Length: 356
Image 1 (cartoon, one colour):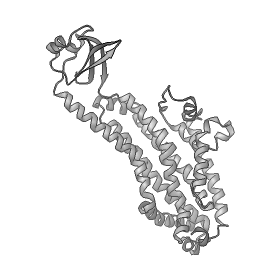
Image 2 (cartoon, helix red, strand yellow; image 1 turned 90 degrees about the horizontal axis):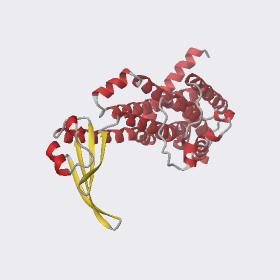
Image 3 (cartoon, one colour; image 1 turned 90 degrees about the vertical axis):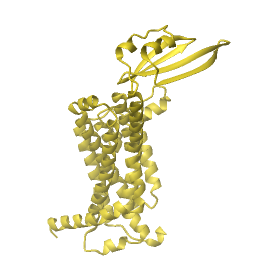
Image 4 (cartoon, helix red, strand yellow; image 1 turned 30 degrees about the vertical axis):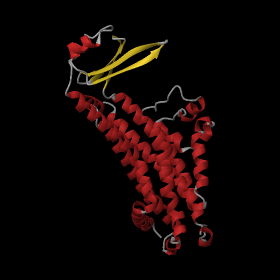
């Protein structure tokens, strides 16, 4: 049987499986995983837009706000700058006496100026942007590495690829594929490509939407400067990392779903293996999907210095290889897993009684 004919068979199987993967009830929760961060960033953007709209009606010039000095009284500040957009007063007992506190906030069109008074005198003056573009990009980097790579894509590929064979065994429909005039390796390739196409579309789409939602509330100047600078390269790197994670995890879970009855066992083992990647010897690190995909991430994730030492060790990425080496290494690891799966699928026997 010639190669072009087998390739057409692979394409046909992938097309048929793709419809089942996208519209299967077992796949709906994967969409929620992919879209959850975007929903959170959209909510953050709406909050920023509302605060901008609220603050814009009472904008004070920077010159006036710069003239406010420590030791000023609330009355003198209001006389120069007008009514604040936020004014809150409270009393707090300190060293056996009541201390009157007052917090006032002004807006100069870009930054918020927070004034803190104690006993009627300005004690501190703090200026901060309404939205910190650099901070938001660091938050996105953390969401991508800690949520997408370690959780969403991991468990999403578990749900998609495990069901390609195991789901059909549970539905008692796998024997129809085995009766078709196609080699089992061809069936394996078609199913893998279907799962891969679905997972890449879902998760790169989720990452792209989340990235857009992160940029949406930022100022036009910040956004333009970012797109003229590292923005396009960052977006491409995040999308490439998500796609490669789908390639790697997909191959592992496809093989596991074909060989193992209980998906929880390989999921727990692989999750632990990925979690302790930073502690492993150099040769064993190369057997981890996370080791390769983290090398493509353009921005290191934020890590709280007050976090427990063990948490910092587990969350800190190991020393990454060059991006090109990481991509080639992950593809080589995937090829090895799929080759092993193609050998195993030839000996796969159907026993629906064992699956019920």
